[in-house]
Image (cartoon, rainbow, N blue to C red; front, side):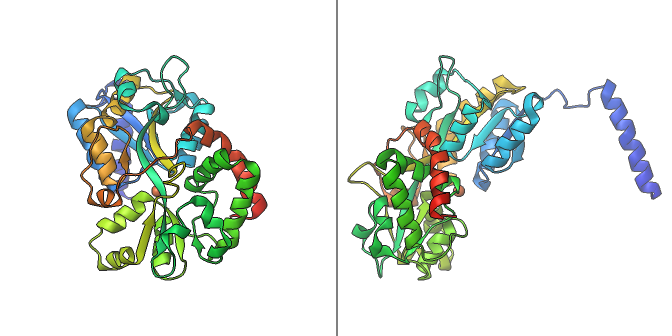
Length: 350
Ligand code: FE2
């Protein structure tokens, strides 16, 4: 050990010893522990603004949905988590089922977040609240596909599209939720047949994220791809010439506009079951539902606000236009995902 390290270690030890008796400056500051699966740089300003307005400091743990839920379970009652932000409705539902959240009764949230975007309410308030929406849309190569060939999810399995489809892993939460909505509409037999058709139409084994699928259509590797709307909107707003070229090659379809509507997923917030700062947690979720925060959440990541009255100023979303949303309740989607996963295993959709 160098003398510097030794000195440092001694001082650290002293600091630890003192901290046990005398609270360090700032130790009493109100704090909020946030476990977030939203990893969008534009969300940073959102947290800064909340701290400025409330004096509550946010300590963040970032992981994906599955990682956060595993961590909550492992930590149990000792978990420091106050607010949980997830990016998939089925995962919010699963966490609610597993008792990882606590109900929140809030007149403000009830007034602003529509019932279809809230978790179960057994009389003590909803277990989670949707904050943003993202549509699962279709992009296609304008030079070889007609919009009428891909304007319904069911058509993606048509033999006419053999070898043309690019899509990320079947068991990714975004796809599981879409397939679970299809199960609700089509029933088990037709859904499994449809999934079989999707596998038969793959241009290549599923790989990469949604942006990779979009770029593969532009590169001519596939004729059609499935993506969340914000990945496309991000490319539409990009100033990079390569991204502009990608967008110019693409046609866009919001599937099932003449029928049941396009599948929409959500990101949403909940108060953790064992939250140590419950009041701050509710305050933060109410803040996320404010006009300003909704605009930042939605515009920053090119999503749609959960609060219907909020108007965004987003040229890409304006260009994509309004659309009809599939009304399958998120609880049904959540309940269906386990059955969908079994189907994916059977049809070999990795
Ligand atoms: Fe995403």
